[in-house]
Image (cartoon, rainbow, N blue to C red; front, side, top):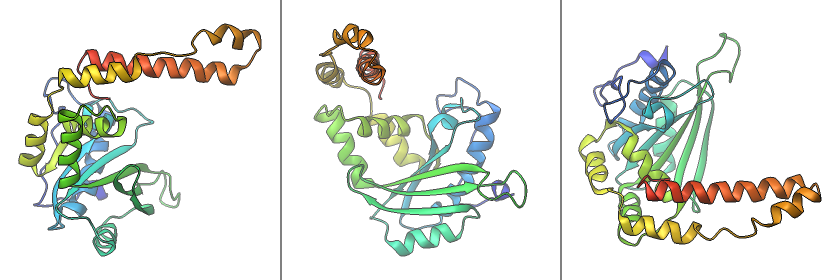
Length: 238
């Protein structure tokens, strides 16, 4: 069982969320254990400063459809040898390594761990690893907190850090969490970006024309804008 392995470089994950208020459900507990197993392989690298489990498992409310998200923070950009060495330590099906995504500014690896039966490959739990450099995260924090950049991906990374369970580099992750207080000026920037809801009047036309595709898109766009604004006025990162 890969989730039972231990390493001196990571500590066991707690059975409560980072906030310490809500207990972690069973679906989250074993996903956190799998995330910890994967994190151990990355934590052995001297170039890795911090590792965390994030997503719904870290928040304590994973369900049967939830994947496992692991965040890795490198001192310097990982090279292919680094990534190959880490992946060799992990027992998994369908190991996949992706080149650096310049649009999302992330290195990614995927794993499927465990099997429904011993011979049923790729029937286990999906694990997604996203890697960033420390300098990248600091720039993102500056963009969002100082420049009021409402970018979804940048906000999502900050949210992951705020709710993630640290497995290595507690001090660095705590430093980022302390810095990431949601500023009022960012809330105003988000409302300015999403507050103008265009073309909602067209829903009547689309209903009469039975154009369900564009109707659904119109409703989705409105819901997305409203969600962004609700999160902003409540000072919650996307």
